[in-house]
Length: 71
Length: 71
Image 1 (tube, chains in turn brown, purple):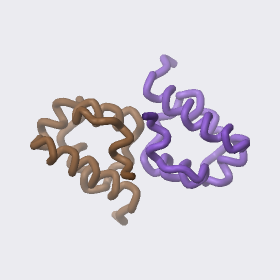
Image 2: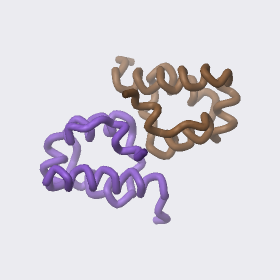
Image 3: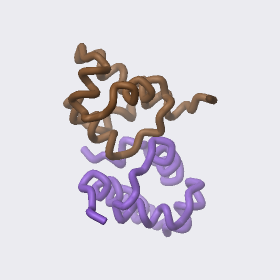
């Protein structure tokens, strides 16, 4: 599967924010109500994440949705 | 269809940014490579827009993806 730069950038932002909070993918999955495998796929840039999951991830990480989209 | 507050908020942000640039939905659709009906659905909060379309909308509007996600 060809990687998409926008999805990769988004996935890396999720990963950095998760690691900065010392959370495992499992813990983030639990906090955001998403499946652990889905979190892994997001971070690898394999998922075209929708707005609803973006807000769920932000709630799970305690950050703002805009934080996933860089400067 | 029950409206989702996160999708409604996102749709309103797209609409405001589009109107601020005096663009029609048709023009934004053309600039972002998305279908005009899809733009209408996004602005009504009916579409769970994915990251790829978020970046396409930002390119079409000449703004940053984070601008869709408020302060």
